[in-house]
Image 1 (cartoon, one colour):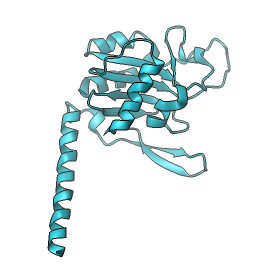
Image 2: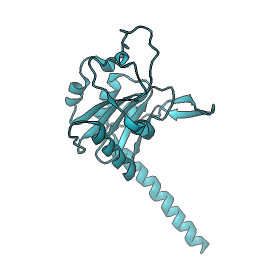
Image 3: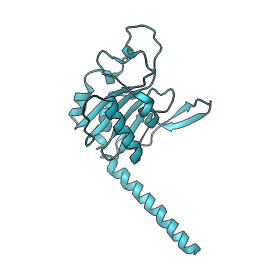
Image 4: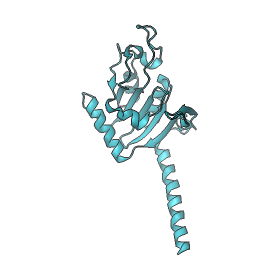
Length: 199
């Protein structure tokens, strides 16, 4: 009896290890890409005063319920038809900056040029600029050029960016619910490279 239990346990462990290796190999085209490298960790302070360490980027998979929640949410907050057979790319902003000068706009390279055109050169995708509804200083985030969509009910934040002080990040989904996420600061080139590699 004990021997049978040990054999079953060994089979479960080995199959779990092999399946996780298989997922990683199909999630990224280039093993040398930064999206596959061990991610640095941020130390963040939680609301109760404790501290947590989180990876700055990682690859994972949404469960069926969360993926349906995400799709329903995007359909609800976006006014055009979304093709979920293509990659979904979300740039998410969480931080409401203090207002120093009314006309000041953050000099962040993701707001310069046209990231949608740059992404289109790499493949088909649906791209969204989504922002925490608590953010009031939209001018800071170039709302004269960017069509920000409010994350009603904080669905995106709760699913992916529930960290205080990291100002959001970006997430790229495949149609099969696998996703790559980068939390905290990033550059426009990070989004483009991650999309190119995460096919």
